[in-house]
Length: 329
Ligand SMILES: O=C(O)CCC(=O)C1=CC=C[C@@H](O)[C@@H]1C(=O)O
Ligand SMILES: [Mg+2]
Image 1 (cartoon, rainbow, N blue to C red):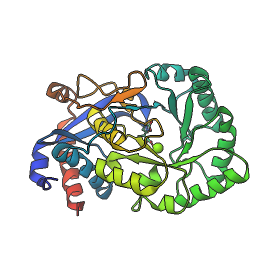
Image 2 (tube, rainbow, N blue to C red):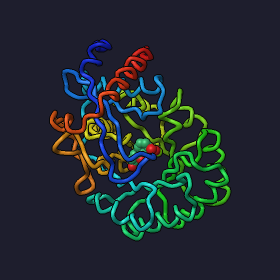
Image 3 (cartoon, helix red, strand yellow):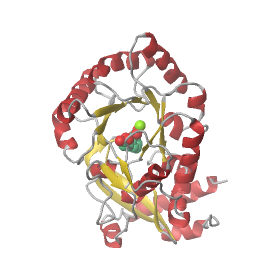
Image 4 (spheres, rainbow, N blue to C red):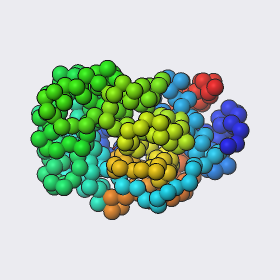
């Protein structure tokens, strides 16, 4: 692996874009993304705006790996992908799913602030209706439920057949208690950990605590493809590869992880370029026939110019970069 680039080099190459979304996701309608540039091209560095320097520094390691080191060899040349359904009204579900060519799995956002379990039930019912009985449906609550709320909501949602529930509660202890409650109540829904892995000091604690059946692994929050591979290897439970609402540049890193894993039992949450209404490449990494290919993404500098964020945002991201860099060991 090459030596770490200097901060000056990274700051000099920094570009920042603002890409519009088709639908509100994670509360935003625009995604601000920074890129570092190295000998291998662009590396996506897009920690969400509210993240502090320590968290953003792990995302920076992933961007540096992409632009300077490249990724381990792939063992497959395409990976299955799930459709991602934001917390939209049930009536909008068919329109969202229509963008996901050939996907046989859907991930549905639930427990959105300001919505009810009935909204979730209606949305999941609409997904089942559009995709049919053979489709796999997973839900993601982003920690929005207490143990009791999750237990109640999942017992009702399980009527639609769930592959798993991602981060139903916030803490590892709650996830563990929920698993016990679900088993006691005879609710057959697996629990997957996302934030408990990607935002944790110790990403394996959730596994040691027997608080999850499935581990969601994401390249950027875990500090790169190699680090994510190590977490996947060490965790000892089935893993799902997912994304961080990246442009095609960041998505290619997710595909590289999914392509390098020895086992890939689940469709990957790597279909989110479909949520964006713009990209920095002419050939976006969006699923066709339900899969994404393992391939290089060629950035078009004209598109980077076209979507460039206002100058004050570049200055903001330069300061952010300096703070994140200082956190790297
Ligand atoms: O897993 C998917 O289908 C897409 C990725 C996705 O849902 C997310 C990406 C980035 C931030 C999150 O709010 C969200 C998630 O929680 O998994
Ligand atoms: Mg999640």
